[in-house]
Length: 418
Image 1 (cartoon, rainbow, N blue to C red):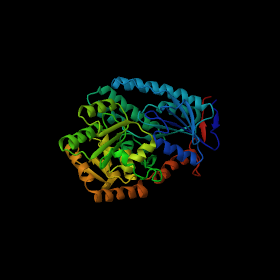
Image 2: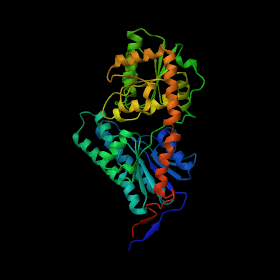
Image 3: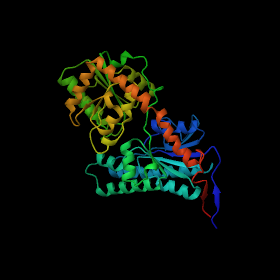
Image 4: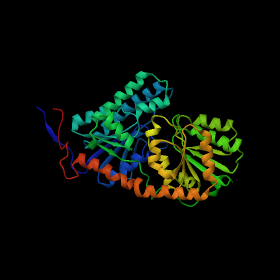
């Protein structure tokens, strides 16, 4: 005979699964965690270990269970091995965390779209509800990285995406374009999809005192912050710097290019081959304070993401962070980049590297336009994009699923194994 078991009383337990970045380094997920803990939820995160962190942390009330990262590389097969390992490691830690009590809500963030079986198992066992936090389009991500990759892999990613959408009780999408994918390709009802942008925190991300030494004795500093993968266009920054410095003879600009990724070593080698070591700083991942210092000193923020099926409909967090620091943005003309930045960015025809370099120089040489664009970007962050505006919709999803909005939680009386 099937027993019926009531899930735990307040505070409701939430499990958040992340694979591609450690927490709290993943800024979006950390904002979500803090939103939930501030609202009285008991939050556990399972993610890969960050540099210098252990397998168990408690940070600001969030319990973080981490496994050693494994990324063998080597193309599509390397990703398959990485994701298989991550799934098994995540399942082990999730079940370990489950011993402290059932989870009212499970959230899985992508990429990859592989954690729906774990969410399904916890639903069968405990009646846990599943929120899919939709960060990326994995089929498009695969095509952008491996345009000639095996068709079977692409079909497999489409299958995993459909399974994730169908398993999810609710979807939180980072922008309207992703929400449309959830409805059209994922078959989700419109009322089950909520747009939650990764809005920056304008109190924490704001311009401070400048650090002139970061310009390396030059008049100007332009900055990039982000991942350095094949689809991120950081090579375009190096090529633009080559035009600015070596072709046009502008020796008054320093490029700060912060971050790391699969292409980091290649970018360093290309910079050195072009004789740009003194002009282009590639420090890798840097502490938050370094980012604040660079952005407070810089004149322009760089969003070099090239046009492809993924980037055109993706929201670039770095773009909004530049705006929070009152930096005008130079970007290629992509659909969702225009939605985010509006008139706080100078847009360049996709693929036009020379046009991108000239746009940098135009802004560097026009302080009045830089100030006006930077002010418009900051106001847009404060009035529309900031996390304080986004957190309302995000929290409402969890309050509904846990029954804290006054309605009975859909999983309040859930079937469990006999």
